[in-house]
Length: 366
Image 1: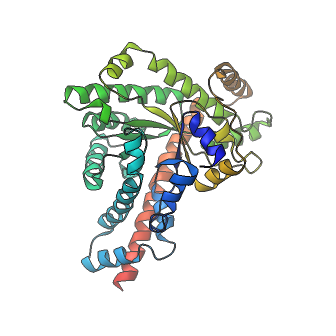
Image 2: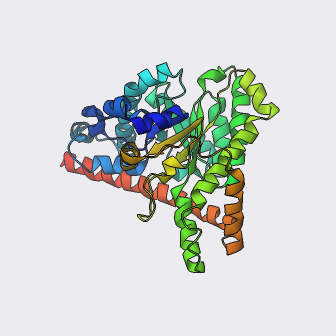
Image 3: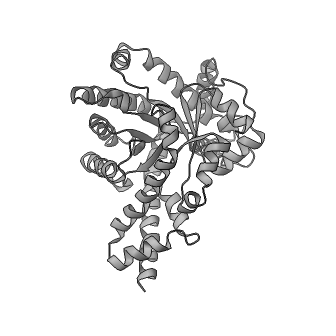
């Protein structure tokens, strides 16, 4: 295993790959990344699937069969995506077994057009859980206001959840509450809490992109590229704080596992910044870092793992956020815009995926 990535793993960071494709599975590349790069999980999204479908011929046979059967686009999308997710889950099953179910997980997203509909999100989560039928699956549910009760109800049914699209500390606190309530209901429903896992995906680079844009308008370049990491560090502080509550201790005594913070959107958007900064500066136990492959390769090549870079730096993070406020950056507005744009981007990606599958089905049918 690569030394840099081993050092990261040894610090308690689970390394996940933010990518999936049929070609990656067919060639054995995912298995290689598990062996050589310490990858212990996979996340997916509609953009990743649309990109995979538009390249090469790995999906041709399945798409041709779907076209012959005359399936509609929605069924085609789910048939294609869940096939890859099942395959990836099987490749990662040894990791799942070795880590007693903590890692070895693969995430699939609910239809993002349902982000503001609690009931439909829960129904979709149940359908995906049934369709993939693997214990090492995560259902991705966005942390919108409608998503919060959906997270609770999905967990209450014994289904593991990757809570995605978290930007603000306030919303993260609500996600933790939804997680606790979901486990409490799951326990009341007779589920084994030790079998239910959850992660809370805190987006990092998008925070910097939005705040940097505002800082440039304000003529302030000194604070650029620092907000995303500070925000994530304060999220970890909240994770620690809530992990010390009596409510969590009662759940832990009943067998529950913690909902680990997951650092998402860790590919650096600004070429002026160090390409591994969202890896190196967010190291702490019980965390996940899901990386696009270029970030993973960069961390393996020249990542500098210096031990824990989160705990002990909370005051520094608070001071940075206070300085941003003093400079004129409205944090509440930033996270509102990011959530709204995030849902819109997810919906646009889903539409792109639908259109890609539609073209492929029409092409094969013709």
